[in-house]
Image 1 (cartoon, rainbow, N blue to C red):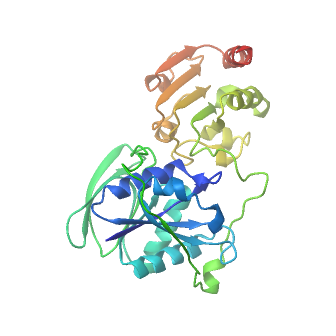
Image 2: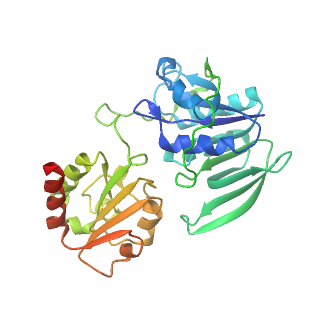
Image 3: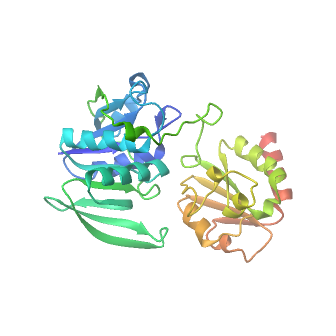
Amino acid sequence: MTVLCLVELDGGAPADASLRALTLARSLGDTAIGTVVFADAADVPAAALAAYGVTDVYVTEPGTLEGYAPQAWARVLAGLAEETGATAVLAASTDRGNEVLAHVGAITGLPMAANCTLVTPDGGRTHRLVRHRWAGLLLEDAVMEAPIALFTVATEAVAPVPAQAPAALQVHVHKAELAEGDLVVRATESATRSGGVSLATARVVVGGGRGVGGPDGFAPLEELAELLGGVVGVSRVVTSEGWRPHRQQVGQTGTKITPELYLACGISGAIQHIAGCGGAKHIIAINTDPGAPILAHADYAIIGDLHRVIPALVEALRAR
């Protein structure tokens, strides 16, 4: 049996969320694990993928398909699933993973389950699933009946664990057969935004909310995030006010994050925001309100003015 996994790259390495998906893929039984990567063959992180038990990498190079085209990516996955006889196709539950797998479902007519935390083959054409519903407030037990299971893996549900022994890996350059309509929607990233650590994969996120006060108030948070090797995230109200772009939003309608440390500054902690940051291993809250909801989810809290606390943290870090 073969399982196919869409692997996204972050700075030339497999994204942390994709490594978590590969870890779950290995739990599906005695299967060969193939990955689908959209990049130059020379840029495929073969050693990193082999360490997670990957046996085959199917590469679609930019010369065949340039940029992110969700329907075209889905067409490639659907074709490879049929070609390899895959019993399951999965991806990380990122914006791209969910979008591409939804397109695969539309192309193949197969059901697709998003945000799964556990997948167990149940013989034949069925898989038992546990998945997040209502932004993670509920866990749903379900059975998927389909010749090929399509699902995405909740980014905070599975720890990334390498295989006990690296697999012998083969790289296959795949020539995509696409229709003109598959390329109607295509997104590209400018050079100023590509590379570096993304919000979804950062080990440290410094979050800012209404308490930051305005666009200019984020400069100290940017400085702190740089010192900690992290990135800045924001609450929904910040994007609603136009202070920061939506791509930095953490929450139910933004990005779900799973960092080692989330430093929430001036964020009250509405349930929609907690749905996005609840996967953080450690949460530190800085807030002037001792009754702010986020304090109930924080490992540590500082009751104080972030405009005094953040500069003090920056000064202490620079001193070290």
